[in-house]
Amino acid sequence: MRDGGAEDRPRALTRVSAQHSLEARPTRPIAASLGPVGSPPYRILVAEDDEDFLDTLAAVLEADGRFEVAGRARNGREAVELAVRLEPDAVVMDIEMPILDGVEATRQLQEASPGLPIVAISGHDYEERVLEIREAGAADYVRKSRVDDDLVLALEALVGASVRHR
Image 1 (tube, rainbow, N blue to C red):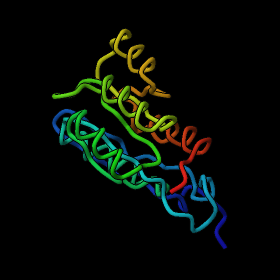
Image 2 (image 1 turned 180 degrees about the vertical axis):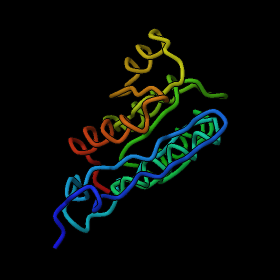
Image 3 (image 1 turned 60 degrees about the vertical axis):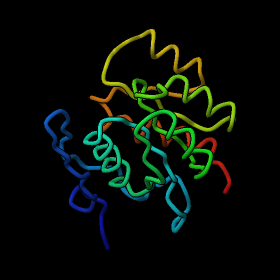
Image 4 (image 1 turned 135 degrees about the vertical axis):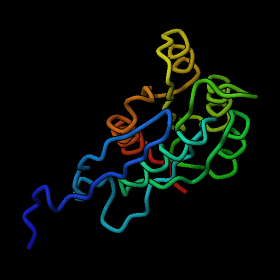
């Protein structure tokens, strides 16, 4: 029988790119799962225009075991279209994206699907833009430099409180 020691815990994936890197670190034990044993993972739509960072986000979410990437959008318009079609449990939305930025995409998603949990992310610390996306309906904000530590915690709090029924 396992004693729950550090050697029993899964290790998070390590993703290294020219611009972003995550350190391997222990994750919470599976016993800390949001849902009952055997429940399907929470479906997350990820909207990010940087392809390398999109891969990083997917790796962080899927390494946790409670989340799966239901779709990947590379601009705000794709994010809105995919969210309407896929009905994810939550969305991770970059603030600065081409075609339709994350602020307007968040506003449109909240109109189309009120209460959809959205976590905004950004590599910049523009307080004004963070306030704008929060006013548009994002429930939380995580700096890109902190996604390995804070993204799962933010999603955990949001989807644990308001999982959409499929």
